[in-house]
Picture (cartoon, one colour):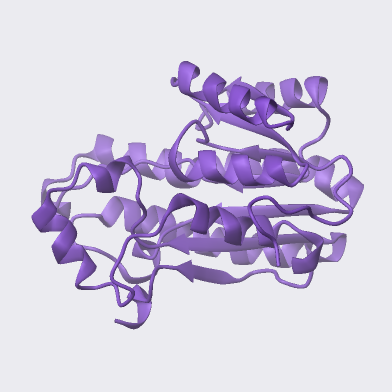
Length: 256
C-alpha cells in the first residue's frame, strides 16, 4: 500500500505536472508525489508566492520541484510550459489535471462569461495539457494521466450547471483517451472527490456545512491528503492495470 511517506517502485525519471497545485488538493498531490521520489512541477497562474512556498517545502523535505507559471487555457502558454519543463527537468510522464474553479448560479441567471470561464479552466485546460503531454508519453510508451473531477460531474448539483458540465466532460475525455493510448502503456483515470476541506468549504457557513454533511454517510469532509493518496496509488506501477476508471472519494455521497 502506498503511504504519504512511502516509495513507489521503478520510478526513475518520473516527472509529474500537477495543474493548479499552489494550494488545496493540488498541493497535497504534489507533496505526496514528491515524497515518493517523483520530480514535481507546480503549475500556477497568479499565486506565485504560494507556488514558490510549495516548491521550498518540497525541497526542504529532500524532494525535487519547480514552479511554472502558465494560463493553461491558452494553447501557446501550454506549449511554452511544456518546453520549459522539458528544458529544466525532462519530459512529463505523469499529468494530473487538477486545476478548476467554480462560479455558481442557477442556469437562468448564469452569464455566458461564467459558463465559459468554468468550462475553459475545468475542461479545456485538461484537453490542452493532455494533448501536450501525450507527445512524449507515446514515444516513451509509458504514462499516467489523472483527471481530477467531482461527484458533481456524476450526479449534478443545483446552481452548478457549468461546473457539472465541465466535470462530466472530463469523464468522456478520460474514457476516450484511455482507449486511444492503452496500447502504449498509458493509463488514464478519473478521480471524483466529494466535499474536501479546502478554501471553498472553509468559507461556507456552519449551517451550510451541516446541511452538506447530512448527505455524507461518513459524516465528515475529506482531507486533501485522502484525495492525494488515491492519485499517488494510481500513478504507481502497482496500478498499471487500472485505466478508464471513475473512482469516487466522497465519503459515500454517491450511494446516499
